[in-house]
Length: 341
Image 1: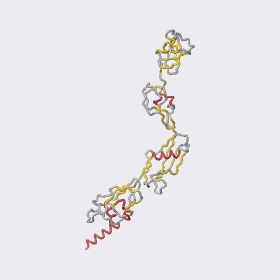
Image 2: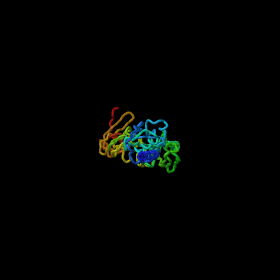
Image 3: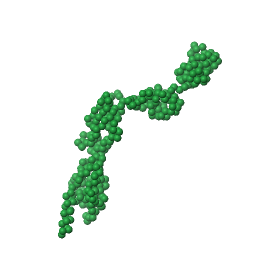
Image 4: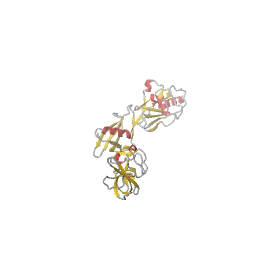
């Protein structure tokens, strides 16, 4: 008789204990519940891991096979976004008894881990939204947006829309800095919030190389692509237009995808000093040529001195190609011979 009364008191005490809210990775209950029971389970656990969308964890989120009314009964507070709630065997057994659910844990280690369904607002999301918000204000200007917090990530409880808003947005055109509060989900009274700030960079378009260029190699038009750099971070001595690269020779090996410094390219030398040069005189109906020796080196368009091989007279010629220089009709050029066109 006494043993029966003691068992009844213990049973009433356990049944009176209600579900406990938890945040983070807290474990609800301390001891494993006894698996010994003569009652066969009529319901089962949903599984070891449960994800909920609402602020409350309901019995139907934990157990399968409940009637609709019992399933809709709140059992505990859902954890905050990004955190977990662990319901151990003792807590599960206590909840089952309290709500007359015919279920008992199979062992003391049985448990359910509850997480809140969340979505993440990233740094890239905030930068893209800021760029869109400033597009009209900065119309006609190419720009990029940089958030100061490199590792920004805001975990927010999902409401099904997975949206976010930038509240209290402000932009200073002088310093090019902006500030805002990220709120997610947007227009939710339970929104997670974080303050952010960053800077707007004006962009400039400059030529870069599509492929590596070796020392002495000539840059062709199809070797060039356009890249955009932050104007306030771009070096001052880079080549800023395609014409500054096309036809130029690399002074050293050049990397692909990077802007080119003006000092790293030069006009290719077409005539070297002491080399043989073909002197060309283009008359109205004929083309006259003679051989000479270059006294200077020159690139395309350079005027160099050349000694006529036959007359030994020094003339000036304009470099027009590899080993070729054009001379003027009135340069007292001797021994020019006609070339049949």
